[in-house]
Length: 397
Image 1 (cartoon, rainbow, N blue to C red):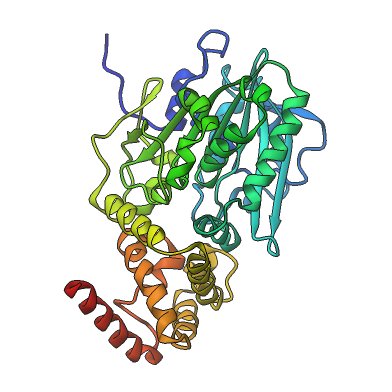
Image 2: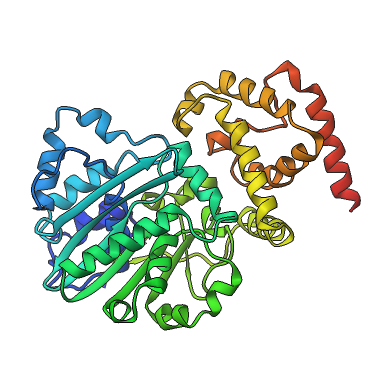
């Protein structure tokens, strides 16, 4: 038998697309694809109760605002519309029914949520939640994991699941990437026992974890055999808090934070291509973040997150893309805001930014703009001295 070449999600649809789900059951790669289709902006486009993916692909392609609808910001892969198009023309995905689309972006609640349902086989339903998007609101909600026992996204996801579980019979599957990876685990653990029994599989793709005590709960133990967790070699988002014991590390064709993008993950046949270990940068971030989180009370973590995003929001940007498009202006505004902080507050920011910059400065604009090594504003000479003193204390501690 010829050796299967390494490919990506789009290649997989082209290769596997002639085999329906009745011929070949759901694979882990199918679940990744559903998690990526959940990023697409269907606002105002879906007016009927349900559509086949073939119909959805055609509606999306013909939308008068196709260009703006297709661009989801620099943090989301621009090939996802192409992935939808390929799915819509494949025997495997074209008859999958999409329904129950919902999307929420609430600045006051600091919530970014979206979900949809993919009925991919008779009495088999995938509930797909959308992960962190390009918005700063979405990223702030991610950081709120560090101090809130429950974030709005998780509450919304639990409510959404309950509604869908009443509408659909048969087996339920859950999938989510990034923040949504955390949500699918949270939902599976917190639904009533009768609904929990209906859950066949849970797919977490590079989602943030939970505090260590979460994994000791009886409700978690009940769903653990159904949980399938995946991280790229250079995982950053998935290294926030602690994760499950069993997981796959996936090879990626990207570097740095951009390995978070599943369209960069290598696929061979029906499976992802596994790597031997996490990168040193990923390990560094896991250790530094969790040591920091374990050492501080939730109140102090909340203080840090609010201070950090006060600095980031001083850029007047609404998304990572806006920061990237106005690098010099955004950085100058952020550094100016940072300079106003009290020394104690600067210490809070510097301590975790040190880890974030090392792990993600080349790819994540809101962190790249806080790259203290090459400041762009003349007001931060004092900040550079503060950083030098901080690093010296770290070396001597």
